[in-house]
Amino acid sequence: MSLRLPFFLASLLSLAARALLDTLSPPACAACDAPVLRARVFCPSCAATVLRAENLPGEPLAFAAFGGALAVALRRFKYEERPDLGRPLGHLLRRLVREQAPAVDVVVPVPLHPRRLVERGYNQAALLARAAAGELGVPLAARALVRHRDTPKQAHLGRAERLVNVEQAFFVRAPRAVRGLRVLLVDDVATTGATFEACRGALLRAGAREVVAFCLARAG
Ligand SMILES: [Zn+2]
Image (tube, rainbow, N blue to C red; front, side, top):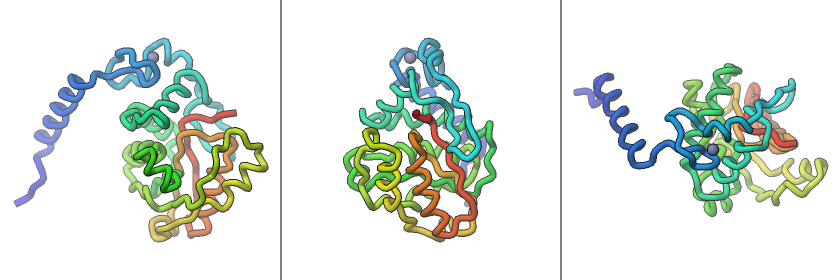
C-alpha cells in the first residue's frame, strides 16, 4: 500500500497547517514586525526602501542593493536568532531566480565555519539556498562546500586583504555532489565578491562545470 497521500488531501493539510501557522504567528514585516498580508515580505513603508540591484555581467547577481529595510531584515536574520526570516527573505531570492531562470543542476550555499554554525545554530545562506533549490526544482547540496578557516569579520578590511583572507578558506567535501554539474552558489550578502570567488574556485577545482552566484543584497 502506498503511504503517499492523495494530492488533494496533502494540499488540504498544507492549507490547514498554513492557517494554523498564521494564527500562531501572523505574517509580519521582516524589518519592523508590522502586520503584513501573507506573501508580503515587507510592510509598504519598509518595501519603499528596498532598491532593486543593477546587475552587471561577471558579478554575483543580487536581488537588491544592501540598505534600507533589507539591511535591517538581513541583520535580524543573521545576528538576532531569527531563522524564521529565512522564509520571507527566501521569497525574494525565489523572485530573483524566477526572473533570471539560471540553468543549473544543483544549489550550494556559502558555508559558515563550523564554530560559527554552532554559535548561530543555522547557516542563513543555506536557508536561502533551500528556497532557490525549491524554486528551481533541483537538489540542494547544503554540505558540499566547507569553510575550514574562520575568516575574521571582513567589513574593516580592504579589498586586497579580503581576497587573501578568504582565498584558501573553502574546500569541497563532497566532490561527487558537484562534479560535472552547473552550480548555483548562494549567499545572503556580497560585498567585494571575494567570498564568492573563493567558493567558485574551490567548486571548479572539484570538477564543477560552471558556477553562477546569487545573493539577496550587494553592498558597496
Ligand atoms: Zn516594515
